[in-house]
Image (cartoon, rainbow, N blue to C red; front, side, top):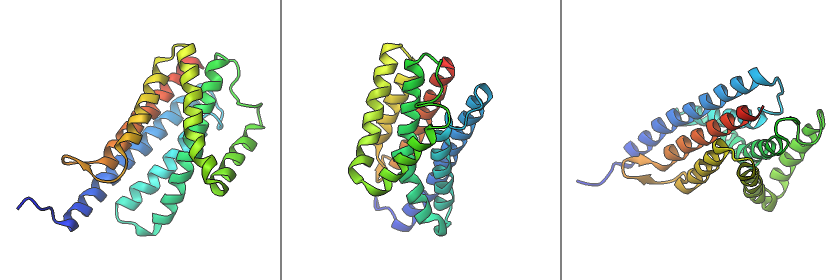
Length: 198
């Protein structure tokens, strides 16, 4: 029979999802470490930290730890609506300033921008949906103007990650895993692009 046992499909999704989320978390950890070696600034790596924490929670969830299911959902929302936009916004700002200015507003004031993004993510659905595309366009502009191939590759992989989605399969491969792997590539490319500037 060509029918797939639903129970086996769920187990398969969980085991591969745990692996791809763990790889995503590891990618974030490596990126944080390499950037922090060059610039000891927690705001520069905040986006990576947020995505890495969400991916770690996802690895536990897919490993069968149901107690983190709601936490993972909340962290994933903030990683997508704050972590990634903040990363791209800061990358664009640093790129446009050619590495001379490492903060978006000024040292110490970036925390208020981040808090504002978190509040908007919780309170306003429309703002949450607009932050990612708006900051992606900003980084695309900065990457084209200053010819940063790493950032251009990261943008392409981030878009590919969205195209894959998180439900269903493409052949034998789960879409959520493809999405995670594309996101790993995007984050690593953003890290390389950032290091090439600073």
